Image (spheres, rainbow, N blue to C red):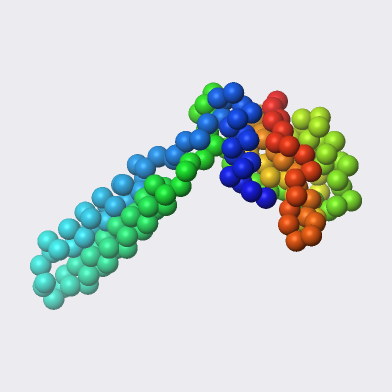
Length: 166
């Protein structure tokens, strides 16, 4: 299952309804700023005997928060982006639905009908011989799916990217 190829096919087949967009950098930047402020607050506290523990706690919390924010910011900047539904103003959630090979007909029928709810309600397995890669809105009104079958040590697509809407 190649998620990058799936997303490229999704963007090409949606006529601009779903686009690639990066998530906001606001939260990681705020974490870095909060960490710097905690560090600064800790450094302003004197080295009195009573305040040493508070000072070291603030400095440590500031360092940990700033480093966590910086790492989070780097991950956000390094990625290409996520599928974003322009009309609903929401990012699509990724999920891999795993099914038994015996359910192939039911899975394919649900995909062909465009019934995402029926697909999600089918019983799933932990070990998948049949997997469906799905990117969907949280409310389920829009979904893009592609079915894969495990054969010869790899997942092979058994259908193209299908758009399912309510």
